[in-house]
Amino acid sequence: MSIDWKKEVESRKEDLLNDLVELLKVKSEREDDKKTADAPFGPGPKAALLHMLGYGERDGFTVKNVDNYAGHIEYGQGDETLGIFCHMDVVPAGDGWDTDPYEPVIKDNRIYARGSSDDKGPSIAAYYALKIIRDLELPLSKKIRFVVGSDEESGWGDMDYYFEHEEKPDFGFSPDAEFPIINGEKGNVSLRLHFASTNEGTVKLDRFQAGLRENMVPGKAEATVTFTDAAQAESVAESFNFYLNTKPVTGQATVQGATVQFEVVGKSAHGASPHLGVNAGTYLAAFLSSYDFAGGAKDFLSTIEEFIHEDVYGEKFDIAYEDEKMGKLTMNAGLFSFVADGDEAYVNLNFRYPKGTSSTLLTAGMIAKIGVNKVKIEERPHHMKPHYVPADDPLVATLLAVYEEHTGQKGGEQIIGGGTFGRLLERGVAYGAMFPDYIDTMHQANEFMDLDDLFNATAIYADAIYRLAK
Image (tube, rainbow, N blue to C red; front, side, top):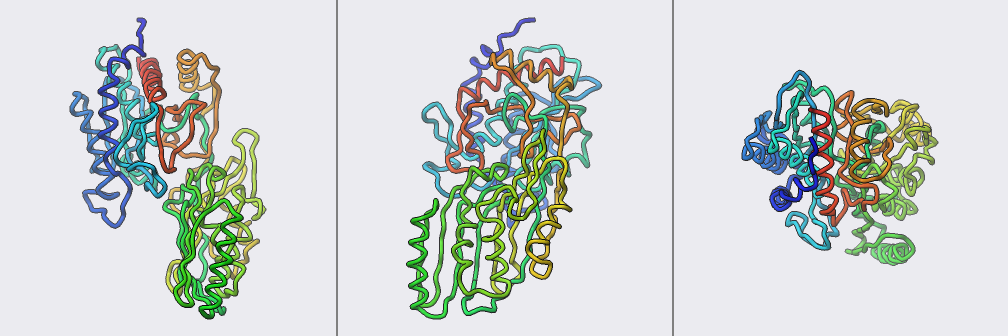
């Protein structure tokens, strides 16, 4: 049977786009302060989950909501199950947008909104691919389960809960990365460096905050510092303005007596690609570290300046590592917090690491550099080990063949630092929806998805799902 997949997508473009716009309007950022038993990650992720499952109910699929943690949309019958994993939660919008991040705008053939490329746009593409297969009543030998998550950007608590209640599919993919395929993902672990929140010098660090999520490069940092007197405060503010003029950041210093409030604005980026961002937190710490701090405040600032600032590969800690297949280890300083004489004094480092190293080696290396008396290092939950599906696996081979036939471009295996739901399955990969020449705006201001890419991905997904499940 010959099927013109692009023609099928073309006839549904308007409906697809309308559904995506409505989904993008749902502000689905995780909000722990608003979570309830009925909304485990806050009202936004729950609303987006229900919205997506609502499309499945509207279109006549079998739908199951697993206690507002996750859910699935099912079609077909068979002894094997093909899983397609997407997520409705998004990272915080942050600053720097030209438009309202939750009022989708279409311009220059792109749709702008938080979640447009990560992961609501690709999710709608994969959903409409399934819908085309159902509409055409194509014969299948396997069950297709479209799994919808709501906590991918944080702790994957959605999938932990989901798989306590549902069986895992036999194989599958996540439309949450790029073509031609992602069949390997680096390990993903966050190590939190804890410091004493003390001040023992003539200058006092009252507060230091930067970052929204561990998997985002902080685009903004703020600090409040009390100096010896108003004259020193004014002098430091002048020095700070000069510093800003020599660095790839902007900001301001506001003086109130002997106290100065500092603000630095850098550039956010995905934590898996920290080299694409400008870390506002490290630039602010690097400036402040030269002043007369002591105690925990000095350890906090000097560690950032000496070992983390302008280093995303762990070279200053002597923990850099590279594998021939998986590439380099990367390090993102995503969260900074210091509250004088409080409980909060830490730097959160998110590592994406290849086979051959480990969190134990990373921890030991950092302690050796900083000193055991200055820092305590905690491994955060949801450590994910490196994941790889061989290139000769039938799943990988089929998906690459579909990509090549639709694009005319040769496909090959790829391994990334990002973590996707593809790694939930032993035979799981990430597949699209971004094409090789795309502009990566995930986790950044003015996130967008190209509409041609959206529709082309839908055709590829429809063909791929059918070949895998027929």
